Image 1: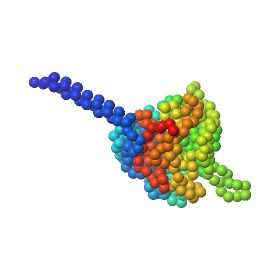
Image 2: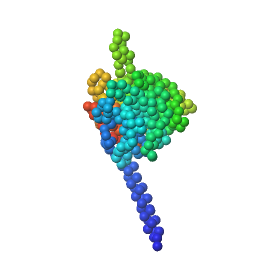
Image 3: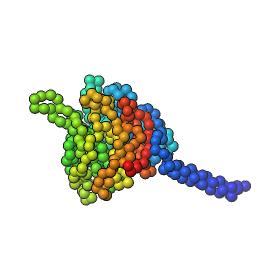
Image 4: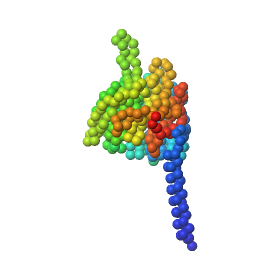
Length: 358
C-alpha cells in the first residue's frame, strides 16, 4: 500500500531543499568579496562578452601568443553562481577574430563582426552577425552588418534594438550609428555619432540614454609627408533616444576626463555608466603601443550619473587591466572576463566587484 504521507513529506522536503540551496546561492553571490570568482578554460583578451541569466559568455578574442595566429574563434560559458567555466562550440565559420562585440536581447546573444589578421598583417573587418542560443547552445545567422565594423560599442535598447556606435571599418573609423532591429532582422541608421570617429571606445546605456567615451582617432599625415597617426580622443558624448523614433538620437558633448582611455570595460550600473581600466597608450592588438612602447593598463574606475548629469571618480580596481570589450552587470555586481594585465599578460580570470565612492 502506498504511503501518501511519506510521499508528501518527501516532496515538501525536496522543495524546501531546492529553495534553501537557491536562496543561499543568491545570497552568497551578493556576499562574494571582490576578486576572482572563476577561471576561463584558457586565457583570452579582446573577447566579446555577454550575460544570460547567471551565465557569462565569451566569444572570439586573442590567446597568449598575441600574434596573428592567436586570433581565436573559441567560445566559453561561465556559471557565475557556481564559479565554473567550460568550453562551447566555437563560432560557426571557425575564423579567429579580434575586437568583436556581443549583446544580449530576449535571452539570446548577438555577436558582431571583429576583424581578421593575415600573416602579412593585413586586417579585414568581418560582416557576420551570429546569434547564440544558450538553451540549445547553437548558432544562427542574422542579417550582416551593412558596414562591417570592429572595435565598436554595442548597446541594447528596449530589449529589441542593438546600436553599434562608430568603430573601425577596414582602413578607417566611421561615424555611423548602425541599428539592428532584432525583431524584424533588419538594419537602419540612426543619427550619426557627432564626436571624433573612433575605435576602442567604451560606453553603456540606461533607459533611453547612452554615453560614449574616449577611444582612438586618426590624425592625418602632416603636409610635408609621413604617415597618419593614432591618438587618444578625450571626448564623451551623451545620446538621448527619442522615445517615438529609435533612429533619432539627441547628442550633446559632456566634459571629458583626460587622458583618453582605450579599450576600457564599461556597463550600465544603477542608472550610471561605469568605465573601468583601459590604457592611455593606444595599440593595435598585442599590447605594444603605436609608439613601440608597451602599453600600461590602469586601475581607474569612473562613472557618469545620467540623473545628476555629472561624472564621479570611484575607487580604483585592485588590479589594472585593459583590452576589454565590455563589462557585465550581474546581481548588482560588475563582472569582467579575461583582458590584459601588466606586462601584456593575457588573463583567464573572471573578476567581480562593486564600484565604491572614492
